[in-house]
Length: 111
Image (tube, rainbow, N blue to C red):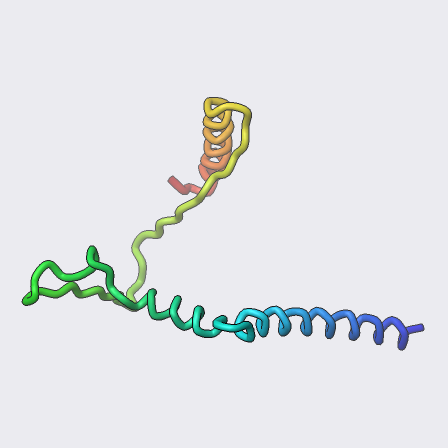
């Protein structure tokens, strides 16, 4: 019984991996599939007219800097998603959710 259960489990998992492989091959194996993917990647790296520097003698510099220092404060950003019949009802539900969340933070001394 154990052998049959293990065999069934292995066959099920192997079939799922095969479906993923077939799905990947469909995208690149079709006529022009690989060319479309390469064109999409090239388009991500080309600057549009709005992104070009203002003059021939100027340039834009984009930098990401990592500094290994001890943080003196932290900032957290949260999103709230609520559904309701009207906008006003949705706003009320969101305000209630945020108020309840901020109340639970007060005992932790978080402003």
